[in-house]
Image (cartoon, rainbow, N blue to C red; front, side, top):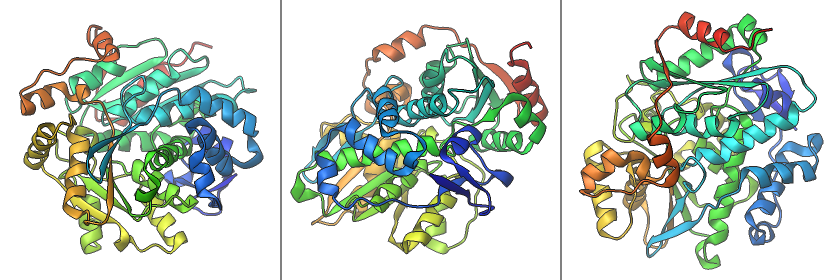
Length: 431
């Protein structure tokens, strides 16, 4: 498998290099040089989740890793289901929160850990993973890499801008996991990660890597659950499918569009955001004009400069898909709360991110279409918000209850690259 740097097309790397590096020169994202396609989608949809996912990922990776190796990686990573749940006639929820950290990031985080282990199996070089999180990436990455030899993980998150339970899920581990509460926004954290990758000496000194959805292995893993969702639908409902994706950094929508490029029958996708609506405004006006990030009750989507958008534009250009084929919508906190109440009254307990995707889907779904929206995290991860809106008392699942009782181990830092750089050097093993 060859991938090229979207900012410098002449830089081409293997899958292993892309996984190890994370980003290309000039902070460029890696993108597949060839887009595979499956001729018999029905046969693929008849397979079980792990077998099908192995076929999909092998099609991208090629002969760089054997099919047997990829199958073992997938089997180790995807040890939990991605069920669909019928919310009402013609509308389904794809529940992606049945993994160990109760969020969709478990799929990508765990597959990336398997990928990194596979492509560095013969290396004695230490690796430092630096990533930014707006809530759920941190937990998925921390748990996926916890206790792994020769890998240090440093996670930056905006202080006071993720839910307390999200914070407890990954800031209580210690060992090879270091968490840093940054006085700033998620976009600030993301900018600090990019600065680190621009520092050639730092990159070399600590073996820098990233586990954000900028890492191609994480993104590829997310393709698989779109196929799993369609496989669970009645065959008669597959051809008129509209999928609404709650969108922050836009990795999830990128993966969905890659699934479509493989041949998955999806009529159209909808990009659903909160008031951090850079992409909806861009799709409406053609003007890319990020604003200051606003804190919302759907905090994992509080992103004004989504990293993955260049991949979406590249894919649409290559496939001849107009961006005007994408649906879009933005939902504020008040509308989100009303939607949560409506869904709860109809018998479905959701959380703010899924509610936003449902809200925009409801607005745009035609009578003859089938709707699917992504539920990206367990409602209990946003217990304070959901309990307040619904006047309920959500019981904490075991993983959350366990970590909620543990002390926070986070460092605190200003939005300052020198301070972050010092932390990155400080966590290195003594030579």
